[in-house]
Figure 1: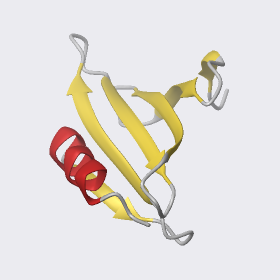
Figure 2: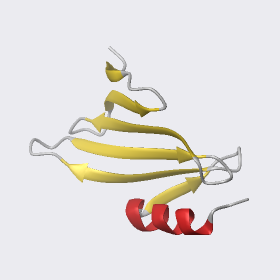
Figure 3: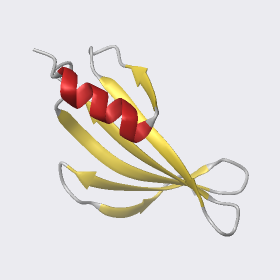
Figure 4: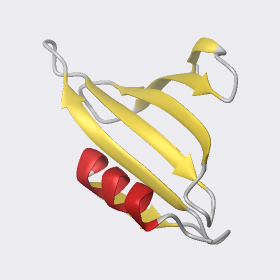
Length: 83
């Protein structure tokens, strides 16, 4: 059963989301860094609005994904992407 209060909190907190094929959602919000890089906080939830993954994505000044820091369900630390 979808938790409407949690869904409303997620929509207000993150401000952007997309529906997933699994019935869940992927929420995110972005922050600008001092050197042109961008951080994106991403929360993925299941169809009942329960968190299944939370991470931080780091993009360079060209918008290319450089690092992912998964924080939930297990903190994996910063992981370089690509090169």
